[in-house]
Length: 363
Ligand code: NHO
Image 1 (spheres, helix red, strand yellow):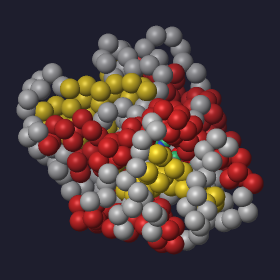
Image 2 (image 1 turned 180 degrees about the vertical axis):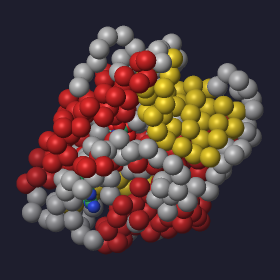
Image 3 (image 1 turned 180 degrees about the horizontal axis):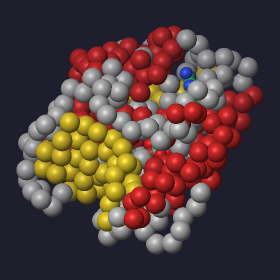
Image 4 (image 1 turned 120 degrees about the horizontal axis):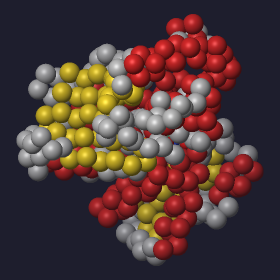
């Protein structure tokens, strides 16, 4: 195997994938060694790769992909292709696919490292979580998923450092969704009136903050997935993101919508419900925010709406910022706080690119 070269396979070229490809291109230009070679690029419909592992040109990869007539081979075949490459390989999963995530154990066991912002592998069944980390520790292939919580913010690395250095995490709480943060900061600002709920939801989608289907943010599942990941890293064997209380902001009448677009179209009819929630908080002199918390001692995890004083750091967030407070034995009553942009293509891709660098430094 060529020690001075690393092959990179990228699955998914949407909002995050496109930003990642541009960061990879600039990284490859700045770092001559090891040579970073793009050997595979695919979306759900198309694939671009050469059977002899010759490089896919990064400069026009997206154009070449749309011009490609190859369809993606089944994942086990892609993994065999990568495992047989003449240098170390890293699989970058920029999809939100459960199917791709289900194949991490196979990839890792074949020596292919994985970096991803996809939450599915780490927040689905506890069994998949275990299989992923057993495969990684057995084969030595690495797995990093910093952007699965808080986009590029150092949330997972911080929690791992706390745990690995022997601190005891007692509680984690905060705003874990860029979409929810943006929605409530603009719908129920600490000063001024705020916009209509359904308008703000559409804005969040067009800004690239939401999941591909915005209902995955509004039903609380995106936050539940992030809390599942953090709880597991803190040592709680949470079974799944549906095994604790999660409040959904989807009006029950819209639960049956067949597409995200149909949902967005009908949402304005239900603006009154959110308006009531906002007014109730205002009457108490507060604002409403969508938060999550993990209490390690009582093993309780929960996600939903809560009211906060206007001066509370959670109420005072801006834009799509996340805030995550780690309460630990060492930090006592003054938690370690991580805060900043928690959604968007470039900041999410940054976490992926930083993970890629961590893997490269260990190959
Ligand atoms: P897109 O734009 O839908 O792109 C998905 C791509 O994957 C498409 O090219 C599609 O063809 C491809 N694809 C899907 N299934 C495939 C399959 N089976 N095989 C091959 N290709 C397949 O999705 P995004 O927005 O680019 O997101 C990509 C991943 O990043 C998702 O897993 C998402 O959860 C994750 N992610 C995104 C963000 C963000 O800001 N957009 C964040 C974190 C992780 O921190 C961010 C966050 O949590 C956002 C959240 N909505 C929030 O906090 O509000």
